[in-house]
Image (tube, rainbow, N blue to C red; front, side):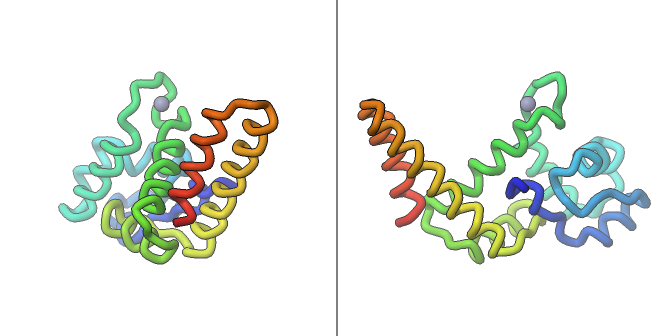
Length: 151
Ligand SMILES: [Zn+2]
């Protein structure tokens, strides 16, 4: 399972009752993207929730793909967002706190930790492969990205 399958909406029950419509707790589930992030739903939310939902939509759902919001861009951007927080030196607990403040989302720190570990392993593999194939520049790039994550 991808990390984006393990990102949940905080205050889910409260939002469901404001919308009077049920949707999955998982933020990136197709039904959540359809129900929570469309205009009609926004109007029914309290101001604070509305701000966070709008921020999320602006930051992750702003692509112009025909399949939006189901094109996969949102998930990709969110993974980038998590890695950037890590590069800023945040650990799993702090990352979970920040996503709560920014977008009213939460995840289990253990899941974030596994995600970060596997990202590091993926970069290690990319680095080794690039070295073997003599792509010095790609190897250096992968190494730098990895070092930013494990600092
Ligand atoms: Zn897209």
